Length: 110
Image (cartoon, rainbow, N blue to C red):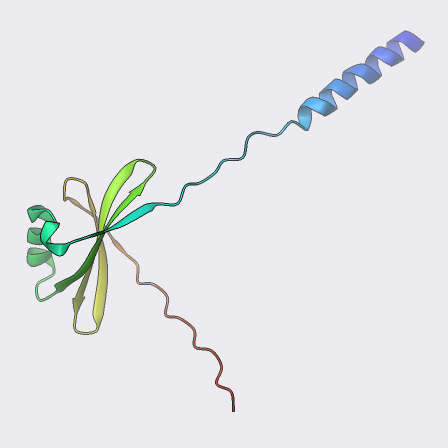
């Protein structure tokens, strides 16, 4: 009976040790961002903006590489309206990013 109990305790100890084994933590890489000259944007991107965003001006462009996927974020403005558009590496429109939340002003000291 003592041997059965000893074997049972050893088996439980192995199960507990294996259950506590952790997987390697997954590290998420930050996206690699690089400024792009507006003149260097593909013609398909500038044509799309001229057609779908009439009256908008290209303010800036950024190349973004994340998870080995390259995209281009283009910021366009018209008056006080600002839009951020995302294009794939071939210059095809992917999506429009939601506007960034406005920063909260610090309380004014009197």
